[in-house]
Length: 497
Image (tube, rainbow, N blue to C red; front, side):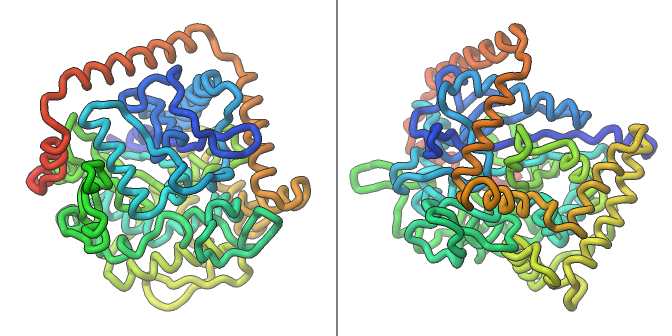
């Protein structure tokens, strides 16, 4: 396979989370709409943490336009089922009720469905339910001919330089104060109900987002599959005192969590990027990785862009492609505990202060570098990959996209995070909820106005019906009681090869 054929073989898919919100900007507390089918089994429409948090999933695509077209079609189908509700177009949540009122996802009466809900109950016990209402975009990516070692090399480089994506694409510099009610947050008051940091890019990926003291104790190395899997298995199988105190079950027999381990399941491990493998029915992800290696990588630090109808645009996708190729093809020495800690500090610094003039970061080769200079070097590497992608596809769409996005380095006001703050100030009295409510309404109207042929409507209706029938089949097929199933599911031997 020559270089052009390899680059034409890139495959990509998108998973996009969004809260369902009421017209006034509060969280919709209604169940997952029946018209959308089963959240357990639908191939394109499910829920994430909360019953109120939709997750829209594309298939795997060779073309950038194709993946965005499918994501748009899934949105169209969803909006037609939501009635007066709308999808909240920001990563930071709408107005939230009391923590215990946020509904966790429900997946029916089967053992696997109950396990998904108990896992979410555990997340609420461990981190609070509000933290789980943050939404984002996950970008799944693969390239022909790349094996496990190559993907881990790319992952190490991504963790060194992924802060650049927070600068270029972060869109969560402000939030509704209901998200941090009762917490020590360190934010500045912008208006009656809005908090912010003036140079923030992505509060979602900073200290207020998916963070915990417990998880910061996990020492995960990305130097090889063996070390990565061993460190994750340790976190999955080692009891954590604070979680032991919660217990798996209440005295009355209700479930608090799936296990008392530092992690309940693999997906609880928060990381900006993950090594992934499609799993077989009932298989543990760690077992799949150990047995068959890494199949693709999942980028997990992308905010929803409230100015893009489906949360992400073609320029962003193309820059991600070039950036991931840059990570894959750059030298990638093994990581160290000190470097991993520095990477985390850089992430938090750019999330909170990324547009601050003169900001410096810790370079993984030692010493400090200005964000501006280091970002310029990375973008130069991405330009090489964008040129190669254009050579493979014909035209100049990759180089053009990179040039438009790279302008944000010299004009920070073009960054989505700066744009959010500017529009809030100009048109919405510095109210985060008012801006995002307006953008959510406009996005809903725009997507409902797009053509939606009868054949497409019928296809989504058929998928919804088939998913409900499949959930019922799974429920009928159960033979184990739930506790026996739970013990089997979390058994350490199921993670081994």
